[in-house]
Image 1 (cartoon, rainbow, N blue to C red):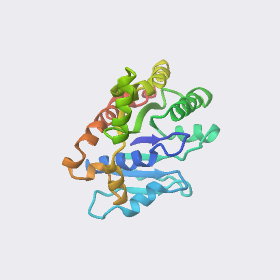
Image 2: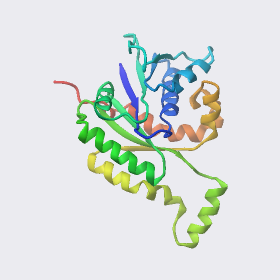
Image 3: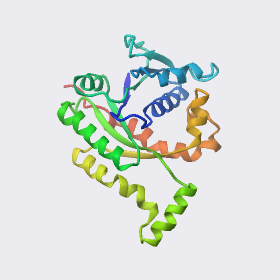
Length: 237
């Protein structure tokens, strides 16, 4: 049984969106999928309630109030954890997972918060690397907007290449992750496709492929990493 957790101490980074899209991807592959929603806001559970019955089924558990009892036939458990989880609660939750994905927004504040959170999780929380694998995903990165075009003109006048700006924003985080040997897996753009899918209880993998081709391409590095041995803990001797 594969156990994947979406986690970040800072709210609004897209944990629930990644949770539901991962779940919809694996369900579309014919896998038995369970979403365990530990967040009292219940965003993932509300998404499941909106999910059409003619789509591949996904089971939901309101883990903030109910016991997490998953059928043995389950292939994937995707866990959505609330923001603001720290200390012993954080340690206990992370130890439920084989793999933790941390979505981070492209702002200096969010990146600094992510670095502090990862430090707490791995060093202060004493999460054992052989028991849990961790990766970071850049989420909701803007592209091709009128604001971006205006900024590009300004930055070009200052001899700053806008196309590398997001990379520059993440540079300090990448260096920090590199020291800890944590992969920075992919960058997901801010796209209306996620909002359209979410409103209907769908993931982007449920939408018309011609509509979401670019989004799916951005997901491929993450899906490939999750399918590799690098994302799995070392087997217990």
